[in-house]
Length: 91
Image 1 (cartoon, rainbow, N blue to C red):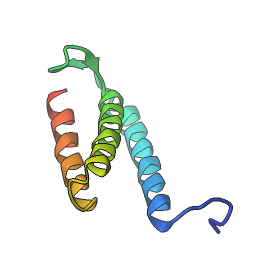
Image 2: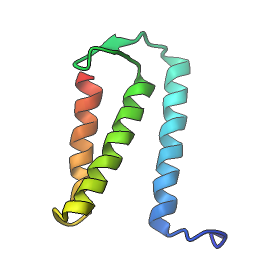
Image 3: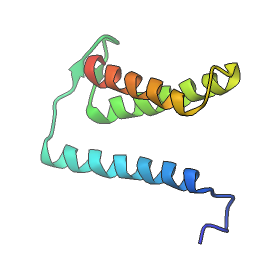
Image 4: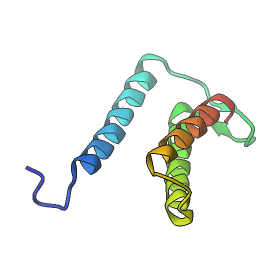
């Protein structure tokens, strides 16, 4: 099924989770519209902006984790979850 590209189950799950997040955030934006808020970055952000900042930051966290060989890669997920919580709470 996924032979057209070098997909692994982990890669497929990753992209499915991203697609699921986009779907959930779209539904939230329709059902519960929000006004932008200003956080520690001193810029107006919405849920979608904070999701983008979280995904971008998580990519960099994982690249740094791999580059510095800090430890097993699944532990980077824990760091990313803490980062995501902080972004959605204070940004």
